[in-house]
Image (tube, rainbow, N blue to C red; front, side, top):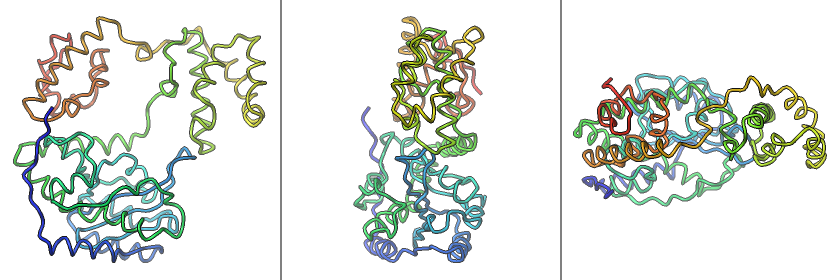
Length: 386
């Protein structure tokens, strides 16, 4: 689809210069006392921009490196390597009187909860807001700032070791820029959402984002093994036992799943006969064989193939169901054209597949359900208005 161009509202040059100064003079906080003082000051604001920097290349859990906060006039950079936990930040995150503005929350909520012990509510996601106004679904922060405010940012520093100290000056500059414009973006986007009658949509989606983060990762371990659906049911039962084991080890040892054992290795072990298994385990790299060999044998021995129920979502769609998904996609594209937004803002192919399989996602209880009600009958999907 052709993307909408928002009415530009360039900021004054003096405002741009003031933001530059705030970025250059960002307050670096590396003591509990300085963080508490800053949080007390920040709590006086109706809205605050937030962002996080972290490292997650060799660990299961993200390692927080920095939390950035801005009221649009000042920037505070919280060193969460020096101060890993802050009740003061947690109180600020949980304050109902202060809107927390983030751009594409991703893993930010997890990081903020790790440091502050609370979830950021209420939330305003500027990327979600932009998509609801017809901009690209994955609009980058610097592109949105330029499109809405006419300000060019450098960008391009996200992939760095944010846990290394000291942080280079250019990294601190980048981190501060990532939040200085969030309060002003929120003001403009909120105004446009309200004018378009979509502000409640945004509030609903942001509340759901926080609740999903609070619920944690509920995806089944088996679904994380590439190619699992190709296995016959007895082997799939064994693979589920191994996938659950890998998930437990990854969390316990704080390692990426692939560092514990690769998908293809799990699949090969699950398909092995009793005679092949010993040979496969002997072929594992020495460290894996010593650490995990007995546990693998134990999990495979305890796998209950007879009592295993093959999950419907593991198998590919039938030709008839693929056609139903295509029909549903066509209906969603029609609605999206009426609203001048990307179809995936309403429902992605993955979400429509869930509907065709008979699931009822929680998002049907909101604004999407109202638009889809009665529109997917040709796909044999019946949705009543919430």
